[in-house]
Amino acid sequence: MLIQPLSGKIAGRPVGRESQKMGSAQSFSEVMDKSLEKAGAEVKESRPTSVKSKTLSNVQFSGSYEERIEQINKLNAQTDWGAMSDVEKVRTFEERYLQAFGDEKLFLVGSMYTSYSHKYEIIYMNYVSEKQKYFDKGGPAQLSSKYTDCYREVKYSGLSEEEVRMAIQEKWQGTGCLEDKFAILAERLRCGVGSARVESGMMYAIEMEIFDKVEKLLGPGLRGTGMRPTDHPLFSEYYMTFAKGVGEGAGYRLNWTQIAEVTLEGYKNVCRQGNISPEELEKRKGMLDEFLDDIRKGN
Image (cartoon, rainbow, N blue to C red; front, side, top):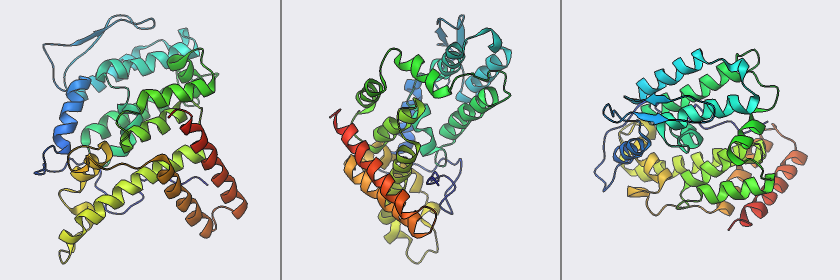
């Protein structure tokens, strides 16, 4: 049994709600606005994105992020998927989101933030729902190959699985904040070069660690108020800044060993609850050790 994603796991988490700005040097609202501006997701009527690719004719995306999503959905509905190879289908689908928003990372770490930012929620959840709509069994773009295999061919053609893992680590190592580590884990899964048990468990552990960090930070101010941590107007702001390592969370870092230790504790809890056997627990511990050995090769 896999550890479930954090979303919906903790009672009281706000869903699809952008919080108020806080008084720190750089709040998440400011960081998010700059991020999406860089990605081209804010209104830019005078500067529409115009892109040419091997699988797409000249496509223009412009307007707000909601309008760009509508444009993607319309293109998907008008596409003759049956005329494409499996790899061309996946390339076309992935490139549309990249062309519309300009930020590949957005679709790797989006699940971290869907409960804390309406923009992330709308963009990321549309990506997920459109992918399911077109590529799941019976969909108009149903594949004869695995999506992960096609995605890996699109992003890292010609590389071995070990080379793909190394390339992903180099690509997303960034500043070493938890968002960067989450992106590495997410793309390993997206490319099919990781273990769903290990990577998904570590992604969950990252979310939990950020959540616990913010909960402890806000705790003193909640005493006597009857408020849950997630009801605090600054909870979302702090969660985002600690994930991105900016503002109040500028110095917050966890190394891979620490994340693996938290993940293992999660596995032990699942074992104590009787959801996995002691033998399975030992197996997962060994898989975590193998992950650490592998990730250290890229350091």
